[in-house]
Length: 59
Length: 259
Image (tube, rainbow over all chains, first blue to last red; front, side, top):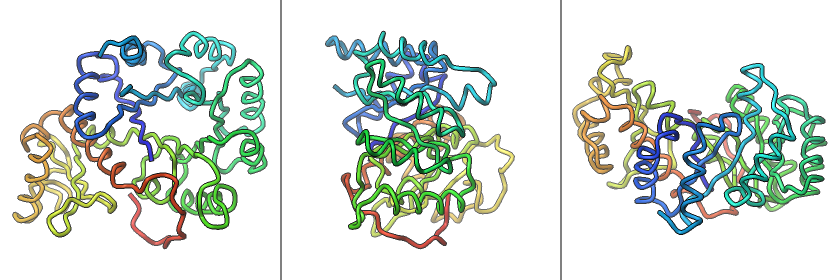
């Protein structure tokens, strides 16, 4: 079973906090899984940007 | 790649806020972000409680060249579930959390046994459980994937989840202790609810768990982000304790405790 973490906008919107949570999770599992909601496009943009960075070879 | 995303339309949020989502805008948004949301990493624009409209939206998105995961709402007509199953090998079940637990379990037992498993109990396709709040439901069925906000919700109420132990190991496939740790909680003083009221030997075990996750009792008591993080780690351990997918659905007692 793959668990996608949903919600927690205060963390999701803040790249420092989101990275901190991601890095903590990756200490225990091999994927950082997030469920994003199109209804809140501004709140999910940070996570999309992080994913795009990863695709383009950044951290 | 270490990040894996799923995109939900947010239909439920839109409905509760009495707003409408435009399917063409949603399609455009996905098309603008296809590098981040490839095939089967976004859901259909579902219409809460309307199986027919949800299905029409699914067909429309496919006609526009997308590959959404269809969302079937528990307790809408099963004919639409059957239509989805003929067209894709990854579906989602939504509107689970809005039902009461016993009703949810009866409904999900029926759907899983009738439509989602072969005669040998193995799942017929990948199934996503939308917005699961119950660990019992999360671990009862052979979901391919699930999503949950529970890791955040518990923390907001000043609560952390602490696994029981067996032979010295933390056990993640049973209901945990649900422990209020916040010093500001109105549950402070409630026996068996707040940390302060547990027997010393149990408190020591709880502190051992908290420290094994890299936190102190003071941190999780006073910092909601620390509670979010320790609860996130709890759920990740639940995930890790599950058998590799696919696994066989085994009919279980309906009288077990539900959280």
